Image 1: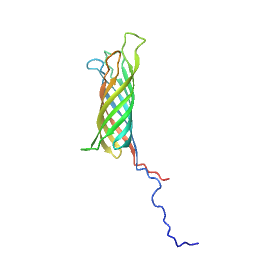
Image 2 (image 1 turned 135 degrees about the vertical axis):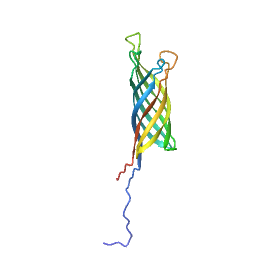
Image 3 (image 1 turned 120 degrees about the vertical axis):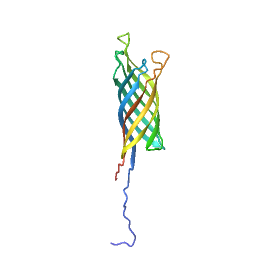
Image 4 (image 1 turned 120 degrees about the horizontal axis):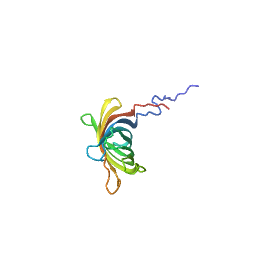
Length: 179
């Protein structure tokens, strides 16, 4: 049977995901250990951030400083796993600046006169910032600086490693779904 009523077909997808606000990345880290003068080591970092609103997001980061051990340190390694917030501002001159504040756990292997006590874990706070520069579509070069607080490291003072990381972030954008 035919109807005299107008009929309209759906021409747009029921669901369209313009972007998934998730970025994942990794890079090379160069840190001052705060374990005597001129003591630097190298390692790797990995991170992820999920944008919530207006540049504010949640952030997670893991860093392992394990290479280039100074000969004066018989054993040294600093690993951290942290999470917190990140704020990414609007880009200017092609660079998108960001600031981060995180808290987590730090694991350290250190030289010791006691062969049974050469490793410990601490609560770690860190603040940092940097910038990202778009290389291609959703791939960004990234550089950042971080300053850490290992609270009451072996006594009343804090250990304050700090360093730079350079790497890349890939943003999961441009995904489309039809349901």
